[in-house]
Length: 378
Image 1 (tube, rainbow, N blue to C red):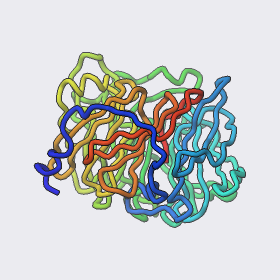
Image 2: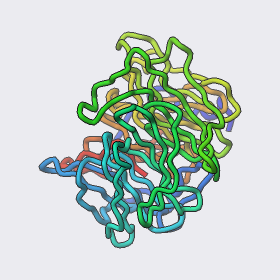
Image 3: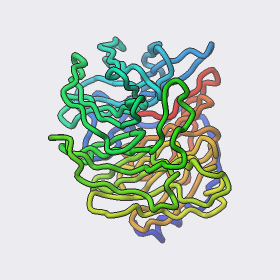
Image 4: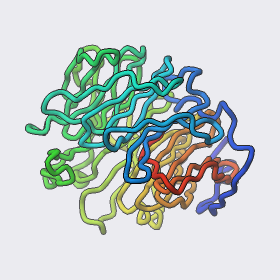
């Protein structure tokens, strides 16, 4: 579909409508995030997210294709991002920054398999990823006395650390696999300490980057950074499509009135970050803050959420053009379904929606006012 045809279906500022339905999404809707890897059949009809419930209690939930809860487990503290194993019925969830645990669960029974702590003197950033062969779990960690960003590779069955490497930056928030042997890390640039984790210690000297790291020996393959005028544009979240394009979403740490880009693209072959256009009214509504970023199943449409702005926005990757947006209060969690142009999103107000950008559909499929879905779902 060319851009002109696509835009006939996705006009700017699609009006939001919410409708409960007895026919929700198909059991195949939660296939893969459509990177180079595919989830096992065990996860085609599930998604997982952390949430905060009554009494400020924190949980991990596995939810079925009709929005029905399958199981939930209490967590030691607030979690950030779950991730499914590529071939086994296992889900891992990483504690929110400054995080001090990773829990792994059997998705069939809900049984906790193992809890892994960070390396001594380190904390997690809330994200991790399984290796392509499923043998290892890879995390980004902060050595908080020095501020160095680290990458740890663990045997998830026993928690043993098999590799420890530099992330080649400060504040490595999220990583994704480019291929079997290359890890892409979003080094956010923020130096913090768990004693006061929301205080940025290097606001004037931030240098965020995207680093491509060999999983064979940990050496730096490639790195891209912002130009100097954007050095306070923290690179936090990323996603990779099937042809190796890396989408990156930013959180600006400078003055609120500055005009800065908030979404970009890069790759292993690129020497820079290409910033995607945003209509200025949309950019202002983002309030300098992107939450989650995902390609659709085709890899040609990019979605980015902003909980602060209460919005999800879409871009054509082929033409690097802004496509459309939807207003969804406190939206952040985001994943692609197996269908092109289609996403599942969650909100901090207990709602889950299915959005089809081609058909201009925003469908409410679950609502629970007693819970607050956390920032990411898988």
